[in-house]
Length: 314
Image (cartoon, rainbow, N blue to C red; front, side, top):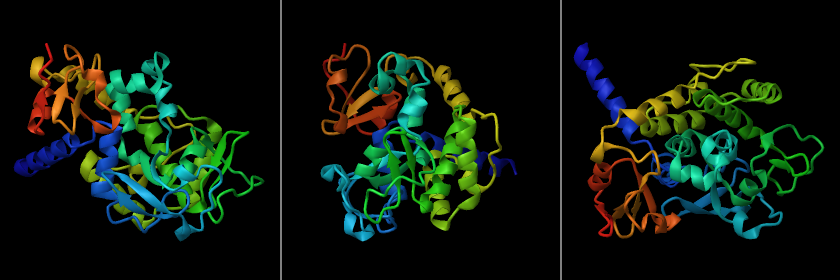
């Protein structure tokens, strides 16, 4: 019994350490381990198929779902990764956002980076709809016209409200409940009531369960609102368990090579040169292009992945 428990604990530990450290890494893992065989199952908001390109990108097959471009042809034709709970929604509640917005949070706040990289909150979408949805809340838009051809997701720019197609409503509700609960975030009573209605009207589908299981194998935990272990009640107080775990992890590291660079930023690797830069003492730290960045928590972690410290680091 004790041996079994120890093995399970070890497996859980391995899953947790495999969780992505950045949004870029999350997209790559989603492409590789979750959606690799799902590109003909339809994106979140319109049900369009796509062709994979590169590590995590794609070209949308707009004809597959009868999509008509509203205004942004370039973005409509490419796959983008939608934060179902927008980065603004969880980011603006953190001090780093007040001191420099999203870029500052990515650079200085490991908790924000973990939230931004949470794979449960990410779905492939038509880029134009992702752009139009912006950071709007969800809502019912009975009088708003459809603007994307046969795609039945809608956006009211004046009211700053988005309504996903019916096939996505249960999914977005369960993701919103998960994010609010796990990271101790607040949600208006009106938004709770709407999402609870969608949660009940559109139950979990088998593809949604498979997605959750695949993500859990990487992240180390499922979305309990998908597995059925939890249900949301009106006025529920979020557990904040994920936030507590992330906060507890920060002071637990020892100094030097095992210490995360949480005070001033992560360790940044360049996937092309296989060189990593420390947030202090490395002049080229901020010069690594966004597309080439790989984030690490420790020097040992970077070196294990085949990276070496930049030669100009003091």
